Image (tube, rainbow, N blue to C red; front, side, top):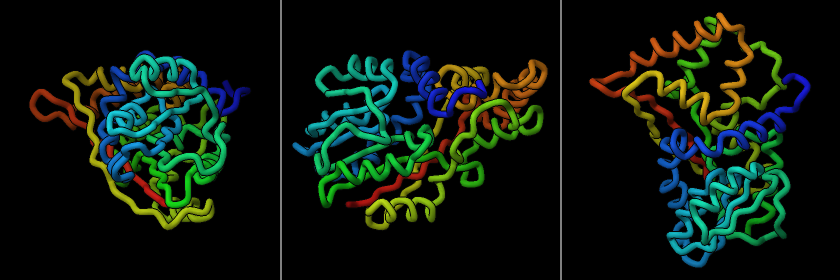
Length: 270
């Protein structure tokens, strides 16, 4: 795996996860759709682009609000799933860092949890600015760090550090919580030409009755984290699994395990 780039591994991973995503991780990310769309105001007859659209839910729900929406993603399997989910919406395969659109085409650009999967997120932000009309808005979401209340990430990363190693043969990845830092968001967005952004923390959650569902969530609907786990020795991986299962029970209330997945929503105007 060490001979491949971060972007090629991300692409291969999302190509493989499209069929499971809606049944697993979308239960978390879809909670952010209404807040994201609300940042754009009345969407009737406005053009909206959903960047790194995955299975298409932001674009699809925007279309239900009357937007002339479309989505773009680098994984062909995700695009196929999006088209199946929302047959009336235009979905295209393409690169978030080099959008295939002329300048000043869209009233709104959304990116739901996509920036952390890009090798050069600054390029994607600058291209979002390019395709927006003057006065258009750009909204993205990013996971909060364990220090900001991200209990799931704290548990899993803590288990890896304790029982395995983060120094495994994978290509370097951009810092996962980089854009959960408000100062960093402001710096990058304003350098791209946007106004100073506004921020809102979204209290997203994940629930399950069985702790083993957490391992399914990781392996079947995530990309980078399974890579980290697969790269461990067999004994370390088993110890990590057991630590995750035991640790998740601390978040059980009655018959339900509930993890906080807080996300920072960032909105800026061109």
